[in-house]
Image (cartoon, rainbow, N blue to C red; front, side, top):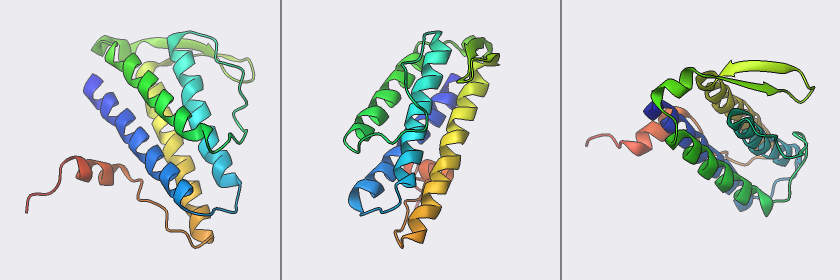
Length: 157
């Protein structure tokens, strides 16, 4: 089980890096693109704090962060999530994390469900970014999980 979630997190980082690179390599007019990427990265940090049982830093989930900050956020999130997961046992994925959402409501959710949600959340918003990039005639990167898997294990020729 641990290997599965490590693979999902590595996929998520791979996809975030591809989209960030695309934004850095192109002139993007629509600021909502940067808002969505900032939201993805901030959400990942908040979820990590929740599963660790620590207070999330005071951040707005819907704030555009400076372009110079985004790569740092991405790499820090990736590093911290991988460190956290590498210290988990297979039984930890069944454990419930107790946390409050941004409205102050209390919840208890299994670690495996939180990670699945977080990766799906990122995929959802990256798809929105891809659509916005196409509207600006910018080719978005492929961000599909299967593309990631194919790059990990190239087809035999």
